[in-house]
Image (cartoon, rainbow, N blue to C red; front, side):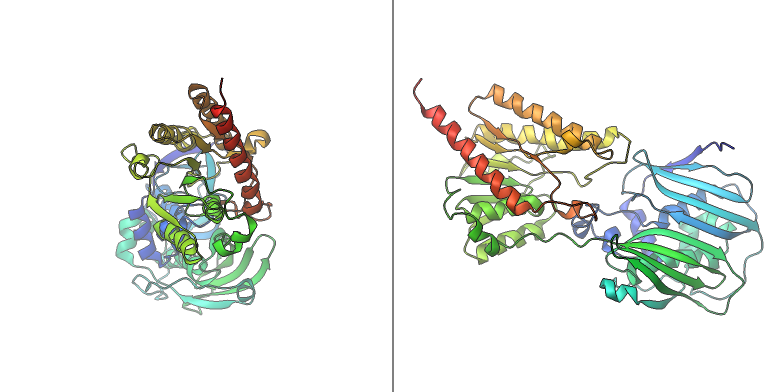
Length: 486
């Protein structure tokens, strides 16, 4: 039988919402709560706690219910993260009064799936949880071996008044004990196990008649090291089941400046005074180090990652190089890179600015995501080039992507923006014959936002050495041609 899905509610989650839920749940994992640290994680920005939209969905579903309910079973999966300030739509498809089916969509794709069987009942009048918020704790840092043999227990907490403020219909209809148990699973994943490097994947709970314990106890039952998938059995007062979570890849560490100095000649880039936009990490960081190792004078920019940029500069300076850094937001028309170029104009521009989100949903083209890519790869790029052209900039490195050729089904917006960027480069060159824009199509490179196993990514160092030399040669050849008599 075909079940019609009905869009009943929608909303955006703000950082204030995030903070309120972190206080209620005790899950202060930096993936959710630290915008600077989250830049270096898989999604490039903070993501909403998985259980938060689950509670919002259940709260919305119960908006017109007045009777007490027991969750006989609850199954939740999180196919994609929900990002802050992005629209989330709730679609319900219930087969009968006692079965609930919900899908949450964001960016045109399913982010959360919820199935629940409910039954009318009275609340359990059991004093199995603390009526307060958990004391904040730092997430545990565990190796895969530590995780594989991990087990433990968590006390249960529920601040009734804060819950009523956030989820009034949920607390009115569902047992506070069940809410406390479900709420504890986000603290289990984000703080306890896997801890710091975790992503909630699935939750499968069923009601039990056992109230012997006052805590949530868990034990890791398996770990798939190929994908970093951790399976845990858990029991709690009145509920038991399974929790699955992924071990999130660690931030990608790029090679140190000292290790790169021997890979290039000390003067092969000595004619460059280079501005590297987006040089605080990833491929921009590698480029900065290689150019300085080859004798270039470098200024690298950052948007939010001041600490990362300073780390790169300190690594270079401590090992005999010279570099500087400054803040620049390519989307802000009031920030003019010419301000840092007037005293010592740049001869070369390397443009690695990119939005936080690297890919979209499979098989879905998002106009909003396409616009975000275009803001960086077209509008922002054109503005920067125009502002620096009058100060003598002639040589520009604009990385494109083999996604244009390969067209992965989750990267339509990215590929379309990149090929539009290539067209813009040709347009700029046609308008200014002295302008050289080197635009190689890069394959997948090992950076923070591509650190997803098991897809292979190339080492950025060897790739960049090859392309920096090709760019240098193209610039020198163009310079010689321009100086030849007509």
